Amino acid sequence: MKIRIDKARCVGNARCAAISETLFPLDDEGYIAVSEVDVPPGQEQLARRGARACPERIIVVEDDSQ
Ligand code: SF4
Image (cartoon, rainbow, N blue to C red; front, side, top):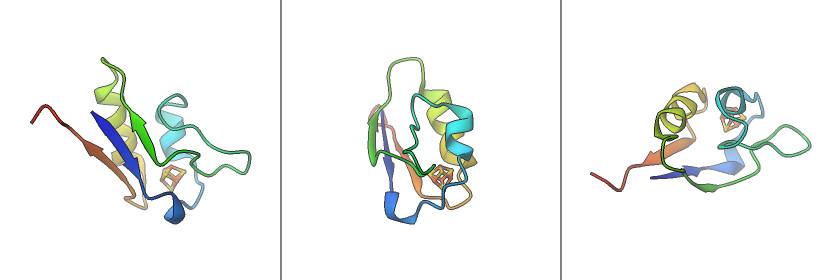
């Protein structure tokens, strides 16, 4: 599973990092620091929750098991 994030549209409210600072690391200014993340096994639920938590809807979870 992968997470893709449209970084340029991040508004920096840190809702994603509140779900998981590991999956959704922020830069020094509080914006999302990554545009693509490989989700470690067992963290799929957190990835989905983080995507739902983003009010800008810029986090997409790609589930390659489907
Ligand atoms: S929740 Fe969305 S807008 Fe907010 S910091 Fe995370 S990626 Fe950016």
